[in-house]
Every structure is written in structure tokens, then in C-alpha cells.
Length: 407
Image 1: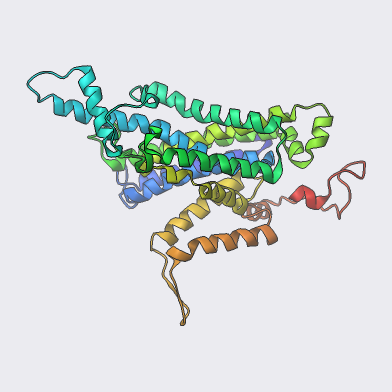
Image 2 (image 1 turned 180 degrees about the horizontal axis):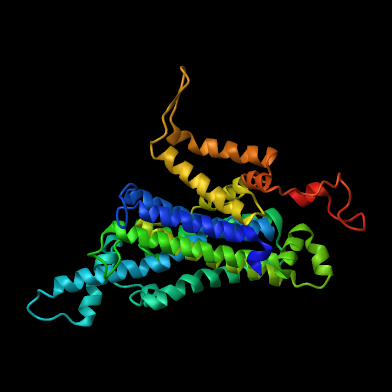
């Protein structure tokens, strides 16, 4: 029913499947080797960022909540799975080392050795309380959803019940992200402070499996997560729920007057998108290999909003296109692959000027192409927005105008 009503869902899934298949065939693990492992990891990480952008489009493009803190949930998901990756891998090393001792090591000695290996860098030999379940994969996978979800629920409940809206809510989400990052920077936070969690690309129990193979597995997992999330998001926005959150975006007071629980809808979408971002982070950081508090910097969440704006806010495929386009372009510019621009009197080093270029692109898109890159697809598909010539969208003078509806 969903695919019949919105064939774009089927098109998106087909393109995603073809892309994944082509990369697999050309990879070093299962194919010709034309695509190096580093590029496969780049593609996998890009799909994770697209998943986070999809969540951002749901909460901002459809519900009208400009959150500048969703990358905090992305990083929290990475920290939760990173704890297990680092603990289990260290446990393998410590166990192998102590196996050569004349007297077999006790469980307490093994745990003490693990704690010393992980937290010795911050001057501690004790395992923090937050790492109680770090050795249990099932619990840590559950915490990937529970910790960011509960954090988002509590923040949203406090903010929405106080009816904090607009720019004030955006500032609050940014302050939340900054506060969390500053706490994680402390050595006594239980997450190794500024050092963060490292060696996450070494999957416990798979030390004999080459990185080329593991990178393909994560590419498959990232593509599957993105495809399932796209189906879920399309289903949500295509029904009554989607109509209500769009109405809240356009005229919150009127929706509240009609008897809908505005705070409940906003809290649900805020929490759901936070959990989607957490899943994206849990898939991203094992491919990146390291996570530290700098990943929670407020600028990261601003980038997420920029990706959605460039791709096309209020278009699910637009958010994905924006994230993929900007992510790959950023890797090209900042990776030293883009040739320097010689103006004669000045040489442009794109590593230093890439953020300026991104900012200019954001301003130009906002001013001249509010539909972003998705407008190109709309034009090809023949999708047109109603030209009301400034007439009211409803029966009374208080109804939204065309320009407001396009905002």
C-alpha cells in the first residue's frame, strides 16, 4: 500500500540496493578490488550520515523542530557500542597475556587488567559504574537505543511541556549538546575524557577477518538500516501522523485548538529521531575506528541541518541526497584531492576554505533554492507545487499563505 501510494520509496530502495551491490562487486573482499577498503568505509560512513539526516528531516522538515543537538544522540549511540567493542577486545588481549602466567588468573584479576588497560591513560585502574554491562553485547545494543532515547525523552518532556518553541528551543538543544560534550571531556566522566574510545575497528572475535571484509559487512548493515528507516519514515509521514506533524509545523496553535496533543506528537517524533540517530552512530564509529567528545561539538549538529537544507527540507530523499552529496564532497576537498585554486594573487587551499564554501552554499540554497537539490528530482518527475498567487490556503484570513507554506 505504501509503495503503491509513494513509488519513490521503491525507487529509493532499488537505487540503494544497486549501489550496495555494485560496491560489493568492486570491493577487495568480494569482487574485483577496484574500490579500496578505505573507500568502502567512506561509503558506509556516508550511509550512516544519510540515516542521521533522514532523522533530522523528520524532526525539522516535517515537525518544524530545528534541533541543533541531534548529533549528540548520534555520538551517544557510538559510545554505547564503542564501550563493548573496546572492553571485549581488551578482554581478549588481557586473557591471552595472563594465560602465560604460572598461576591461572582469577576473574577479578582479569577485570582489573582490563580496567588498567582502558583507563590507565586517564590515571585510573578501576572500572567505572557506567561500564558495568560493557562486556555484554546484548545489553549494550539495548543501551544504544535506551540511553539516547531516554535522554531525548526527558529533554523533550521538559522543553515541550513548557512550550519552548522556535529559536529558543534550538538554543536549548545546542546548549544540551555543549554541556554533554564538556562533561565527556572530563577524565572522571567514565569515558576516557579527551582520549575517547579507540580501536573500534577491531571487532572482538573477528581478529582473523580482514578489514576489507568487515568494511563490506558494515556497508551492508548501514544500507539495510537506511532502507528500513526510509520505509518507516515514509509510512509515518504518509498517514494521519504525518498530516498532524506538518500541521504542527505550520500552525501549532491551531492544531492545539483542534484538540490534538501537540506536545505528545512533538515528544514522540523527537525521541524517535534521536533513537534513529543513535543507530546511525552505532554503525558509524566502528567504521571510523575512534570516537571522542569532539564528535559532540555543536557545530556537528549544525552541519546536519545544513545537509538537510541543501538536500531539501521536507523531502525524505532530499535529506539523504544532501547528506551524501556534502559528505562525499567534504571528503574530496578536505582529503587533499581537490587541486588548489590559483588566483594569481592568492592560492585557495580547499582544506582551509571548504567550510566557507559550505556556508556560502547554504546561504545561496536558502535564498534561491529553498527546495534544495531535491527540486531537481521534483522537476524531472514533473512534481509541481500549487501556484496560489498569494491566495489563502484555507477559508479564513488566518490561513497560511503560499510563501509561509514553502518555508
